[in-house]
Length: 357
Image (cartoon, rainbow, N blue to C red; front, side, top):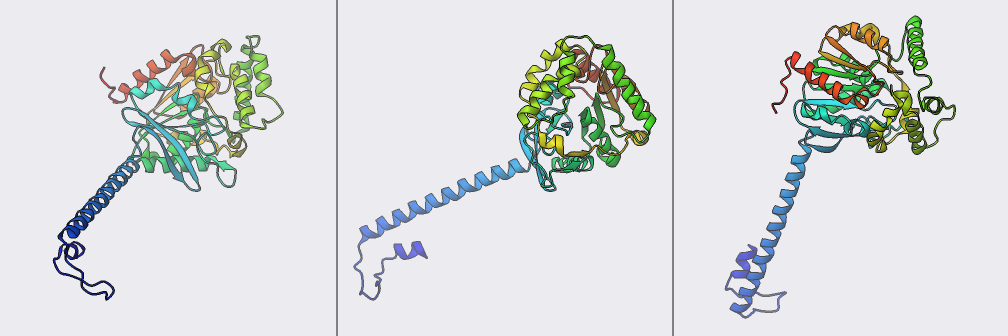
C-alpha cells in the first residue's frame, strides 16, 4: 500500500487542506527515496541474519578448535579444543593450576586426539562456585556436563595426578561414556579407608625423598612446599609452587624443561582452599573399570611412588603400566620422547588407528 500510494497519479488531501496538485517530479523523487530506504533496510536485515546464523552455527559446534565455555550447575567452565582425531577430555587436577601447563607440554598427544583441555571449577578461567567450596562429586558432574555439551557419546579421558583420580571416578559412574583412559602419575586413591594402606603410601613417599636427598635445590624446594603459611594470593601461590618444582622432578636440573609451561600457569588459592573433599577410596572399586587404560609413571615420583602405581595397575584389569626411568611426577616433561613413544605404541594395540604420516 505504501508504494501504491506514492506512485498513484491521484491527488490527495492533507489534514483537510484541499487537493494537492500532481507533480510527476515529486512522485519520482519520493519513489526513488522510498526504494533506496527499503533496500537499505532489507540489506541491514540480511546482514543481521547472516551474523546471527554465524553466531548460532558457532554455538552449535562446541568441538570447534579454540576456546569455549560450558555451564555446569552454578558455574561457567572454560575449555579449549586443540588437535585432531577422537575427542579426549583432559581436566586440571582441581587443586589450583590452570590448564596452561597441560596444553603447553602435551602437544604431541594432539596428533592422535582432539584434546579438550578443561579448567576445573575455581581454576584459571573458570568461575568459582557461589559456596566457595566443592568436592570430587562436583568435579565429576562437571566432566559429565562437558561431555554432554560436546555431544560425544564415548570420548577418551586423560588425567594427570589428581586429574587422573577425577577421570577414574567419572569412569566408575559413567562407564558407558568412556572409550579409554590415559593416566599420568595417578594414584590408586587419595583417601585410603585402610589405615595400613595409608601407612604404606607414606612409607613409599619417604623412601623416594630419602633416595634423592642431597640433590641440588631439593632442600629449599621441600621447605617451600612444606611451608606452614598458606599463600595469601594467587601470585604468592604460584611463587610457592614454582619454588617447589624440584620436589616433583627426579632430576631437579630438569626444572628448566617445565619453565615454558609453568611461566603461563595461573594458580588459584580459591581452588586450593575450596577443594574440600578428595572423594571416597577408589582402590576397592577399581576392578569395576573395564575400559583399556595406559598408565605412565615416573620411576622416581615422590608424590605417587611406583609402589602405588603398581597397585593401580593390578586393580585395573585392562591396563598397561609403563614406568619411565629418571622421571618424577611430571613424567612427560622430564622424558617426553619416551613417554609419547609409549602412547603411540599402546594405541594400536587396542585397535586405535594412528594417523598416517
